[in-house]
Length: 223
Image (cartoon, rainbow, N blue to C red; front, side, top):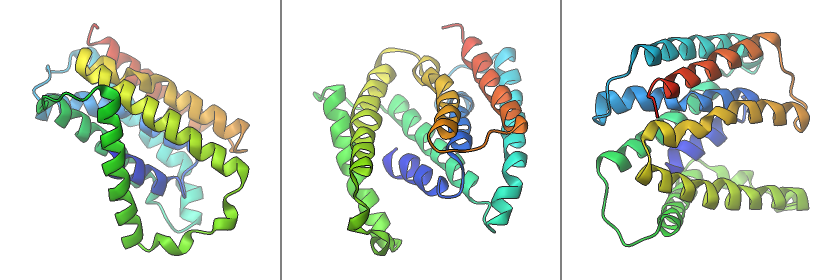
């Protein structure tokens, strides 16, 4: 969940705008429902949910088309594949936790800390193996960078993971993953507001299809 989900996402965002990355991540409930049914013993999707799967797939295709020119200009179209792989890593880890629950005396926060520690060490090893040590430049550690990194550790790491672990233990998996509703909207808004990224009409159409499909997927579960 750390190496694949977070690592692949970071790799993909080298060439993919944050707004598009947010929408692709927003399709996670769709993958969660489909693979949960096929591999993890979850209930068979309802007709409304199948409609959501179709709409989400169309939304991702529209997004891919809207980004084709930009990615092709860089000679690299793998960014979106990295991000799709990241969502599958998150789905795979979540379903493994649901299908093979391990009894532990650790609280959700302690479990989160253990996962982040081990996953962080694994990510360091993978990064060194891929030669990323040469890309580190200490003079780039400006105050804004430190603040952003600190928030990612506290908000995106400790708070997010521990809350998610608690949800996996106490609610259905469809409900636990429903937070992804807001990810595409926030990603596109912040990318436009802070990152200066452009938002095209085709991108908005893809966002609408994807977000709408997620609504049908989770709504169709009935809880």
